[in-house]
Image (cartoon, rainbow over all chains, first blue to last red; front, top):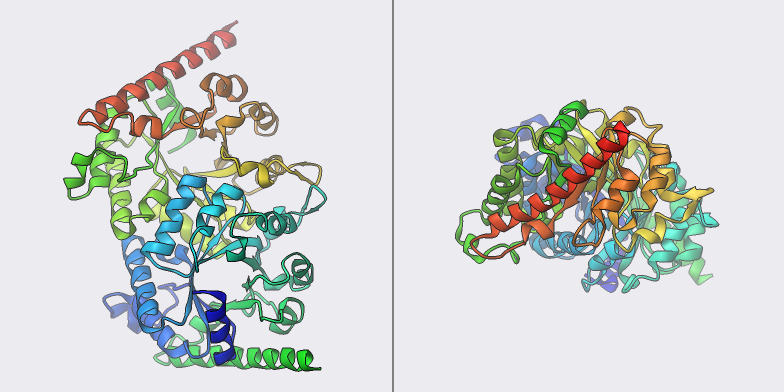
Length: 278
Length: 278
């Protein structure tokens, strides 16, 4: 998928919602546990119920690896279902991989070719040769961790690195990587005020923003500081949508949560348009 | 496994060699491709031929994920084979994972419980709550990336972070994490002179040292700067051993390479003992 196709979908659905498929067998409706593949059954129901309100799905690979071979089978089936039934959807493997050059190439193959995701999240710690193998894939996106939404983000990311905070150095350095136009960046919503700083360095790149909802970030603030003329935001919500209900109505409840977020996003997009017009 | 058991194995085998199982179907002997599971067939042959000369095996998960479900099956079979046939061996999942708290818990379960590795490599970028879930497992080790052996290591790891290089800040900060005695650290052999600095901060922890051999690091230098009274080193070699020959004699050729390294390590251990005695 390219940026134009993603933007077209955003305009059509009036949404920049990404739904995190962090599927946890302890939290899904108990009746699904009788299905041959409960993880996939849950994901499929959530996707069918919410795809009109979101533009992206983001399975976090940890939740699948935790179930071993069965988990990987469920992940494969989920991405295949998305690519077959809803090819317009932007798909993100939230894998946070990072390894030396020849190994990074393996990860890129795994996620972009074998599983055929549109994007994968990558950790920056190992630098250029751990990121560029992902960037070689055309019409695929590498979403680099910059400023994450967890408490540990303050251990290293916000510390001064040769005169500027490490997350800013990551952004600046990544712009020098080959095919840096294929980058997006993870910027946590719990630190919305930082988005202003981020936009000084990467005015146009898409940002993947976790932490709205369960982790306490505000959509309105994220949009005020992070939205660009070409939107430039994918805002993720996971648990609040997936586990809106544990009853037989779980898919309907998830759809209602997703629609609530979509409506709020529609309002933000409208505000942006009126400010552009004025 | 605990540190005493690891040390006992090192003393008995006179080796602190870790063999990286970075198994690549393009590089293994072609006749193995006719096996039902070529990756496992290769790994089993390598393990059977080299286990007397090494104390640890380290499959890099990227090489398995790149082959999808078949790759994960081969990884599962490999760790099961190691745990069953050679329970004294220290096993490392080179996964370089790193994610927020509840997600990190999933990864820890995947590698320590489901697959039952003794250790897993973890990336530090996301800080405390991305590391501590791994440290909660008793008799398991979390091997944190500090200074890696690739060119990209200089992008961020060696930059000054609030007055000291980032890799040193990672070492110091990690020592404040709960159960920090269950940590080991990745320090690349291509930067052996840095080991002196590392030992000022972590005088006793084990270091996993990649980059000896194919990447150009010197065993003698690594030992001079990094070895402690209780050894404190696991030195990894991957390609040089695995792909010593592509013929029918590949396992024998791998054993010879491993034995050459073991002999060199035996000499380093002897030098350490005589310097302790004097």
